Length: 169
Image (cartoon, rainbow, N blue to C red):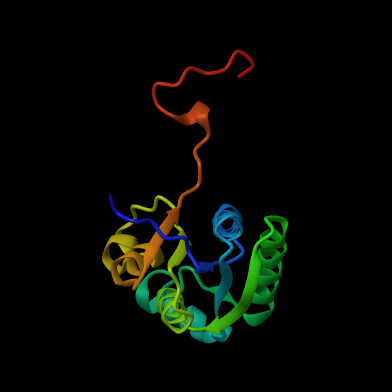
C-alpha cells in the first residue's frame, strides 16, 4: 500500500471572485486538518486604463484572466481570503500580493515555499480563448511541482439533468 502524507504547506490563489470563497475555504480547511501552513496569493495587474484597453482590443479579450485589476482590489481580496481562512482555523504563513501572471505567480510561490499542494478555482469555461490560451487552473495543473486541487463551483442540484425539482420549486 502507498504511504499517504499530510500536507505541510498549501498555496491557494484568490482573485476576490465568488469562486474564490469555496477555493480559499477548501484550502484553509485542508490546512487546518493537516496542521499545514497556508500561503494565500492574489495576483494583480497595474496596467493603466489605456494599456488595458489596448491589450483587450489587440487580443480580442481580456488576457488578464485570474488577475485583479489594481493593488487596492487585490488588497481587499487578500483581506477577505485571510478572514475566511481564519474562520477555518488555518495557520496563515503568508498573504502575498504579486504583480504578474496568475499561473506563473502560483507556480513560483509553490517552488519558493516548497508547497505540497496548490489549490486553484476553475469555472467550466469552454470558450475558444480558454482552449487556445489555457486557463490558470490547467496551466498550474500541467506545470506544478506538487499536488493540485481544482475547486469548481457546485451546481444547483435543481439544475442537474435527471434530478427532479423539489416540491417547493
